[in-house]
Image (cartoon, rainbow, N blue to C red):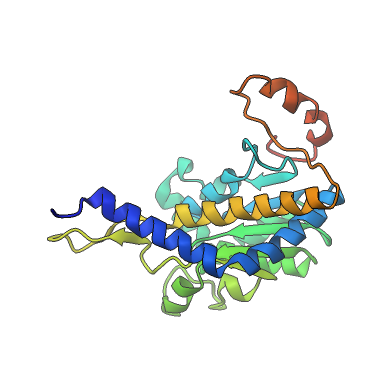
Length: 252
């Protein structure tokens, strides 16, 4: 019997996540140490996904059931698909835009920024990383080294410097997404279908947060964790901490 497309996709996802598990644990633990240290010091951890679906990464770990309350998603309107897909693509290719976003969020020395960008080449993403570095911000990149390395230097999405995200951050979590992102091939169709990057980003980000929480608990720290507001007692559990973060997290 011919394997269904759905089954093919499941196999691709499982193999990809297994590779991330097997090969990225060291990097995830290094990044988790950085996150844990920020939370221990009661500092905010910023997450920015400059570009299209990479914005989903910042939303994945923000205000999330089971997630750290110290996470602040930078949800800049420029590259959100809800404001227009073509507009988003144009803005992520605009020189200087990413630096403006970092400045607008007033990131400073001692802060921690997680940059999520599946392909790791676009101008807004690189500018955000470079501006963060200039300000003394520690950076974690969630990106595909392979995709960046295999994308031509003259690709129109690239930053003018031709730098890649993995080259300009302090810690890299390699999502290992292939060029083109889509992974399922259908006979008779030239273009592959079914993307991988959102699964990869979500797995790495949630693993990072869970590892950070485990470090904190092992060190005697009970970090505030969001409980689902749709679960019994969720509103009351979360309400104990709201005032602690109101005004410190822009989109709370």
